[in-house]
Image (tube, rainbow, N blue to C red; front, top):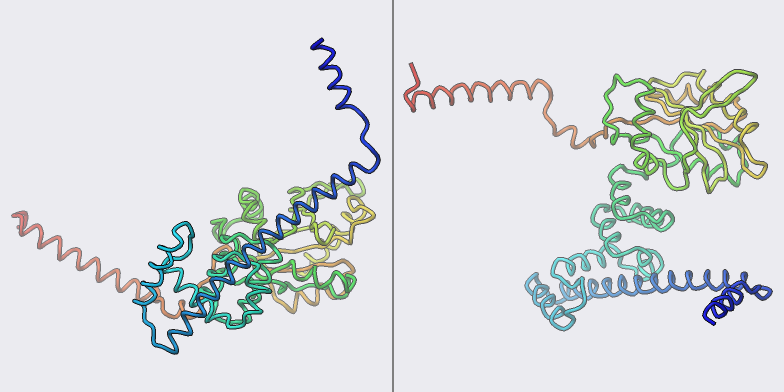
Length: 369
């Protein structure tokens, strides 16, 4: 009897689904996921707006009634006593709320843009960036790419806004208008490879090996949308073997991205080599629905005019950018650092002082002559 019952259950499970069931199920799952995302965004937006309102009121009372820090201390204690389960009502966070309201006086801006980011993403942006236009740039970029807070901090510290879209390219002439701008924006100049720890005497193979060992960091520096295909990717053309340093596929552009690494200055012949690689990839790997492949020549240094001349008559979309193996210091900080001569002089003084100190210690303990 038990066997018959199990058999009946199996038959029931294997019964054909009614017409349209699978489509309905997928549609409902999609709607549920979207509703959950909207609900989470709505909760986040309301919290950010609440913090902005609290900050605005504190700011207003300080200006009109001369409130000081002690009043904010009292306010934090009273709010936490009333809402013990609610995080974010500390004295320090109330000061962040005040700074938030001061940074963004327009409530509509907070509702439409800042409210789409988690609170601590907002704190990173308005505390690290003072220019309103740059704040908005990073907010929009963060919304578009879904950066974590750690990634956001890294992008700000490496000044992404100064590097994105700055590679020298021929995209406007070789790509359709609808994709040339997007293709240009996925490239940077310079790329920051300070996570590799390489020295200046490293060769191209060292650079490639280091990038593969730090693939996650490399992908982060490349940006959103890059999918790794392979390194030293083999192509056979006319019975001869050729190897691409790094091959990626960009999910948004729907095209292959060929990267050629150079541990030296850009040379005109590099553009010809890349043009050859792109022709081969388009013929051998490109799917009919893929867009034309894009090439990126990453070199240690480049002469912009030489690059522009080299790419002018190429018929394949190619970009050229440089990279930094160590992060450069801001100019104002560089000026405040001592020169080599000053460091040597100071080290000399320290050595002399150490000798004198050693002699005195020896005499004090009876070791002197």
